[in-house]
Image 1: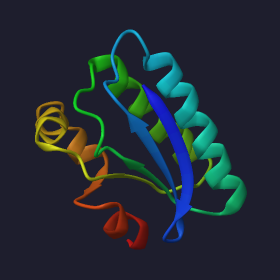
Image 2: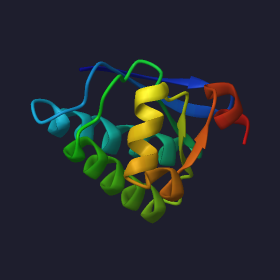
Image 3: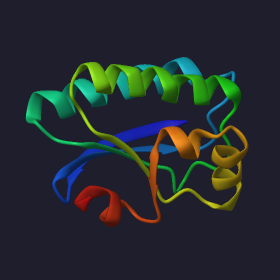
Length: 112
């Protein structure tokens, strides 16, 4: 899993690339925490672009939960964007679509 973070449309956008599973969830979690800190330092909301994440295990979901708690403590709005069909189903089954604001596109999430 690779990760990039860039400013786009008034938000810091984190873009994981690839599956998030037992082999890489710790790196994903560390990337989330670093991006949330950067968003807080710049007074920006944080958007996770899920377009290139075909699968996320329960450990990846747990990292999202931890990230959300970290974001709330830092007063950073954290949103999810552009999940594909499989990720949308994972978010729905796990009820993470109730914990997070989920947007169809990065643009919509960045401007919300």
